[in-house]
Structures are given as structure tokens and as C-alpha cells.
Image 1 (tube, helix red, strand yellow):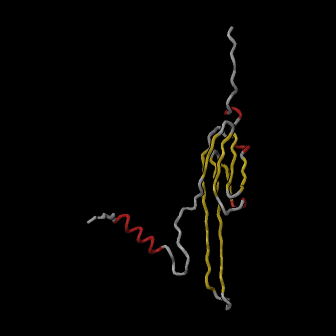
Image 2 (spheres, helix red, strand yellow):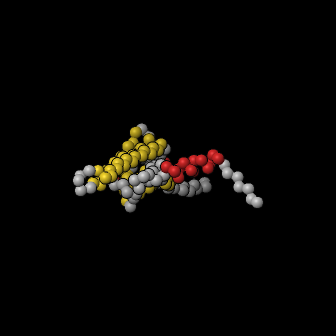
Image 3 (cartoon, one colour):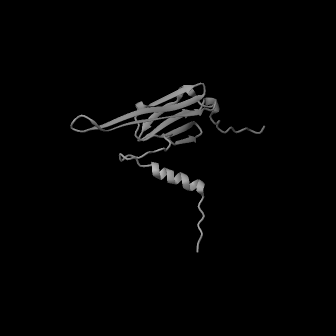
Length: 144
């Protein structure tokens, strides 16, 4: 005979999630986070930020620079409605999604030349480094 030990702390939340997940109208509850994933890459001359945000348009974004903090935010409201022949509501749904990501920029970033581009569901930001922060070329010293 095999004994299987269950942990009541992990069992009870999963039962509750399964119970409350589908609603009686055919929709589903989703408690997932709406914060998009970010990739940050540093090269010798710049920083690159990629923010995965499929389904949005470039008009949906707000990009602000305050002091040395770069903030990227978006708010979107979607409303859908299905009516029957009598003009009564059969189903009406509202959806609201928003996020805000903030990044403290290093002092090496040239804040005046930051560029943003939105393509194929990814927001690309290019943050060039200041001239004095760029690597200096090798210098050969002659022996006298």
C-alpha cells in the first residue's frame, strides 16, 4: 500500500482556483499580471530596452523622463456588447488594462537623444551613452 501525503496549504488554493475559474456565463476569470516582460541590453555605445506588449498600438504608450527616471505606461479600455433582437443586453463586458514600468537611468545616458520605436508587438527604446562615457581607443606610448 502506498501512502500519498498532501499538503493542505497547496491543496486548498488549487481547489478554490478551480472552483472560481470559469463563470456561469461562459467567460473565465484571469488573475494574471499584465506587466509586460522587458529585455535590457548594454552595448559599448548605448542601452537598448525591449518591452513585449502585443496587441497595443504606439498611441497606447506614454513615455516620460523625469530627472533620471524613465517611465513607460499604458492604459487601455475595451468595451464589447452583444444585443438580442429586442435591444436588451444579452452580454456586455468591459476590459481595462494598464501598466507602468519605471527605470532609473545611469548617469552615462544621453537623455536628449533617447529614441522609441514600436514594431511587431515590441516597444524598442534606444538610450545612447554620453560621449565621455564611450570607450576610448587604444593609445600607443613610445618609449624614449
